[in-house]
Length: 538
DNA sequence: GTAGGATGTCATGCC
DNA sequence: ATGGCATGACATCCT
Image (cartoon, rainbow, N blue to C red):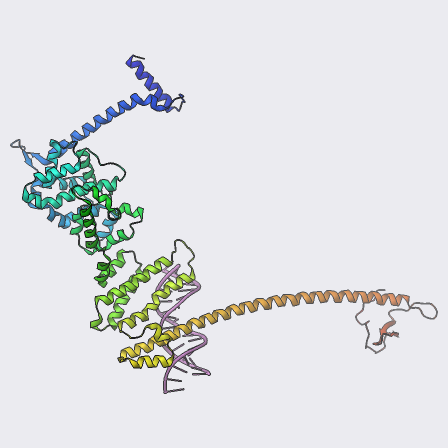
């Protein structure tokens, strides 16, 4: 066993036996000690090689070799990056298009559904990253002594060593980059620890920026730069569905907002800052209820209806509301508050509709639920008109007050002709609506009653039919009995000579008093004659 | 896209 | 004359 070749053969044999599922009687770990050591050595060597390759690649990109002078020149991208500050880059459309937000397939589809955009390649994303002067500083630190340094320390060192103006300008950028790295790990690898190897961090960062299918968060600055309605709409959606773990995978902000404590891991930030950031993001992105309801205009609402997956019919309803009350409304009433109220009404109705009717759970829709949902949608039409015309009475009162009280009420207010007409129409429609409902109910009840009556008549008909059949059977039995009795009587009758009577020549006839007479046939007395239809059993 | 049910609304007649 | 009711017919929405 001391011979290395013999030991190698022994391990190989164990491995072969193990692969062939041969029970050796002991656990595999006992045999795997040497195997694991070999694997770890191989893995470390591969990691070392990979790191060297990455460093070499980074250096090649940072410094371009001038073929004429043989000197290393700064890459064009880094030159460009000095001309364009990072904050401006963040605000630019190009960066917005390349941001990880847009590389999230879901967000990208929602944000830029109109445009056909090619996701940036890894090279582009890499050069984008390397074009940041702050990141170059990071790389210097990484190369020098940051190989085993935690990310927080690297950030701190870079921040301290930066020149003052650049520090000020680049604070957000640094925070953005480090936040991105940190967030990337929080989201993409929530269960794993932060890699201690800076190259691995950088590598993950590169993958984060370049992988179009990687739904990782972007620097918060990117989001702040995107103050378009898309963000105001899409992100609340993420917030609304924050409990949905599936969607959370595609919406990193859900993770960040629902788990703010994870942001505490971000370098250079304490909990209060993170919380402040969270609140700030919440408000800026339209999470705040007061902001989203109070200041929303109808166009935004319509847009929100679009992106919040409201159906086409509801959008039409919203649009009809818009047109309806725009037609009805005096200009002074066309205020945000009214619109917000209307929007709230409709969205709450929509919400109620969605909550009440769950077609996924009930393939056959509940008629009551359906009718209630439709009612909610339809009932509000006159209410909209009443609100738009500022009627002093509620629709319910307009419809349900007695005539005297109603007339008294409308006379007590000073109503315009339009208001008067509308209030009369609302009452008429309301009354007619109730009448139509009762009429339909009555019609339905009549229909049901008629069906019940039909069923009863059918049953009665069956009973009568059965009784008829029973009576016919009994009649036949009685006829048979009478015939037999008649024949028996004839058979026993004898004349004075002891001869029997011929049934063809004579017949029996009984009177009402029970007396039986023997009469010769041909007698024209048909009363009480049971022999007309009696068969003769001769 | 279509069928069918539910509902709202209008027109009309009657009380 | 007026208001309310009943009902047929049509439109619209929703499943």
